[in-house]
Length: 426
Image 1 (cartoon, rainbow, N blue to C red):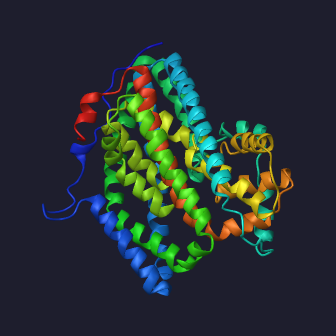
Image 2: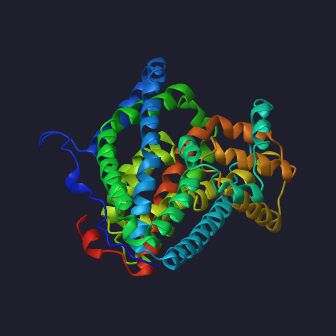
Image 3: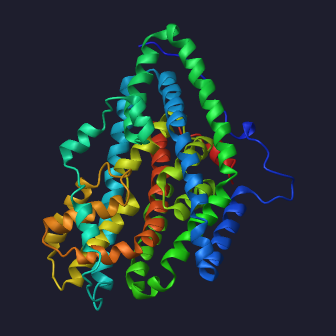
């Protein structure tokens, strides 16, 4: 197969200046937006909720970036590799790592929920069961998940923002482009230019991130109130304890294993992490995560393939949540599940959660379907629905963090991780 030599799309040097030397950086601005949003939500909740359209507008701007950015960068990266075997090897290594990471998240969640028993003493309420019952009907079979990977139209997939379908089409397109050799040079040059434009476009959109973050967190606090955290504080506490343990013990341990400075890595991904946390949207963090990990020293073809694929197959935070939430509901109902029953439920949840990243309240969709299958009451999911936004923020941030690290893991496994680039973040 022919190989086309290309240079990866540019990154930091092409970014527009954001202000004079005394102007706070983007991360500081996001923190300020986060603090202002919480303050508005706690003091003037009506105003905070009214600002939600600003958050929605920011998310829409992010979504309009994703398809062209992902398509152009992934095609350019794969066409530069020109090796279908290499992409297959990268995909296999990514899947192996994904399954190891999600299994660890599963075991951690089961251990915590059985140790702390957050469902003990909480009264079930019959309200809200209609909403969660409707969610259960949206569950996909494994066959549907598999077929869903392949788009009938790339334009339809882009319009719907279906990341996995865009990745599949771009992978085949990139290999085909490499296969035609020099005849594909005009197309490759065009897509490389598109990638450069989209990274500049991303930099412009990210200027609105502090405003979007402020509106998103303000609407959450103003609409839900801080009181809901008191009612189910034990569950929220166990969930976030698990996320913190997973972040530092598992992700930190893997970073140590692949010789990536953990705190340097955290500094590198701080912006996509904060965006994912405050908006509870993995998609919102994707453009920035693609840019950051490429500048962190991971080749763009690996970043462009592994990161979005992980959005369907490497949901560490979501897997941790599902393991805690399912046993929590059993505890609410006073049902004692054996370890074998719990493991069977977790295996079901792991398999059925693949490919639901783009479904609104995807984790609850999977959970409600599993509750019905195992004879557990939907009232428990109705309780979770009330605090799902609070839980979703943490699990989404960990999902993004785990997928960012996955790109570094695969790059190190392939022997192409650039340690000199990593050193620049020190």
